Image 1 (cartoon, rainbow, N blue to C red):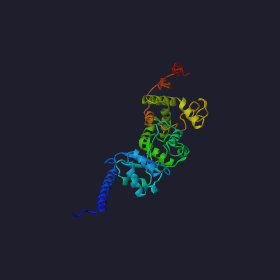
Image 2 (image 1 turned 30 degrees about the vertical axis):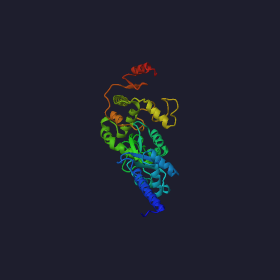
Image 3 (image 1 turned 135 degrees about the horizontal axis):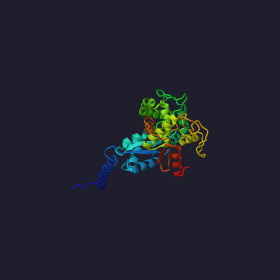
Image 4 (image 1 turned 30 degrees about the horizontal axis):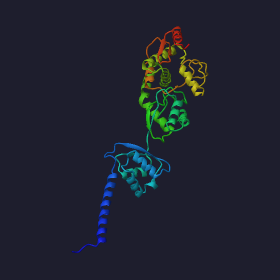
Length: 341
């Protein structure tokens, strides 16, 4: 019998073991480099920091369940040279992506993640500016500059607006999804387009029916917006203001004084109905010279369709309830009973 050389036999056995082991590793690698899930339906935003290491990034991918195995993905990324191609920024990945797709996204430019901004009705431009800045957009000063003197092709002021009027009042409150790099000019254009789309036509069509210009409707609606919160109260407040305008009585609206003090930088000073300002409707009869906030559709509707009432006065209670009166005596009694006198 011819026997095999012991060394040759051992080498052959070792070779078999190496082949089997390599096949096993290849199989395991193929399984571990499969997408975490079969479909792309779970997006995850990954942030790559400045000078972030490959190890830190791969660890984050593992924690976010974007890769099955940090070991095998790290090896794969190393072979593909990802470390030298990383960019600082945010990237949108999906748990249904395979490793080649993940690398493709990470090697490309950062993703643009829209910012969702909500501006409620009734904010004055100063307040909108502060909120937009705190949301990570442009500076408040750049926004206020656009409100004051921005020019927008195809968009004009409401009829009856004085020459040089700002966009205060038309910077419509709504929820906007915008590119983080949007400029103050571009954002205000979105607001003005929203205003035009949602309320301009109704204001223009209805203003003459209540004896006002479209701009005056906006001005009065801004006061109504600040004075009342429910539709019923807004309708009544609008009715009171129209009654006072017809009688030549000053509106005597506290919110116009609050606005005047705020824009004068005196917002923290003691409230005074004697505060000198053309917006002070205790000192000046008629409407303020411009809007004091950006009214919503509800307040505009109240001015265009005010309640028919004999009320001439109202008072707002601390709990939000409003009381209305026909005579000054009745009004004073309500004020005293509420402890506001």
